[in-house]
Image (tube, rainbow, N blue to C red; front, side):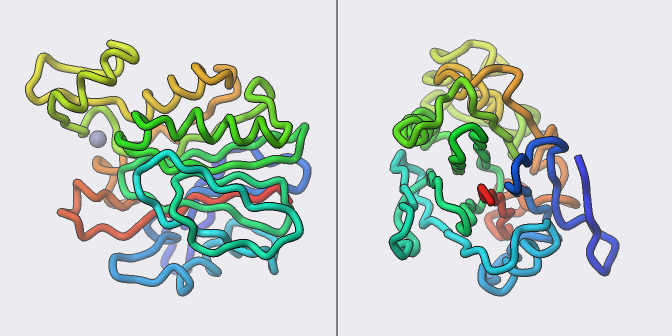
Amino acid sequence: MTHLSDETGEAMFIKLAGFDVGGGCHAFSTRSGGMPHGGKLEACLPRFLAAAGFPAGATPFPLRQVHGNQVHIVPPGARPTQDPAADGAVTARSGVILLVRTADCVPVLLMNAASGVVGVIHAGWRGALAGVVARTLEVMASLGASPSSTRAAIGPAIGPCCFQVGEEVAAPFARLSPALVKDQGPPWRLDLPGAVAHLLRQTGVPEEGIRRVAACTRCRTDLFFSHRGEQGLAGRLIAAITIA
Ligand SMILES: [Zn+2]
C-alpha cells in the first residue's frame, strides 16, 4: 500500500501496489481525501484525484447509489449521462473516472487490462444479496473482459469485528458460506468484505486476483468514515478507477 499525505500530514488515499497497469489509475480515499459530512463531492474530488495521480482532464462519473443491482455502462463516444441510479459502473472508455462513495459498505475496483475495461461496485449487504457483484462482472464480460483475467481491489469497509446483524441478514449470507457469519446470534456478526470476495470468486475472478485493504472502517474512524461508528453523521470515502 502507498500513502500520500496532505498538508496536515494525514494520508489522503491508499493504493494497492501493482494494481495499476498500462496507464490506468486507482485509489481509495481516507477521511482526509474523502467527502466530509454535509460536504459536496465537486468540492473535494479534484484534490483527491490530483493527489492520487489521476490524469488531469479526465471526467469523474459518480453514481446515485441505491443499494440495488443495476450496473451502468459508460459508452464510448457519447456524452456520459450524469448520476444514473446504479451501484455498479463499467467502461472501456478512457478519460472517464468511475467512482463510488462509501462509509462501511464495500467499495470494489475492477481492472481488466487485457480488454481495457474497468468497473466499480458499491456493495452493502442489500446490494450484495441482490447480485450487484455478479451483475457488474457480467456487464464487464459483455464488453470482452473475462472474469478469469479481471483483478479486483476491495477497499476499506466495516469488518466482521464490528458488523452486527439480525437474522434477516445473517441467514442468507450463512447460506452463501457459513464462514461469513460469526457468533451464535442474535446478534450475529457478518464478514461483508469476505462475502464480496466470495461473490467475486463465485463469478470467476481468481483468488490470486483479489486484493484487499485489510482495515475496518468502524474500528478506524481516525482514518476512515463509518456510518455505524459516527451515528449516521459520517462523510463518505471515495473509491475511484480509470483505464487511462
Ligand atoms: Zn471493526
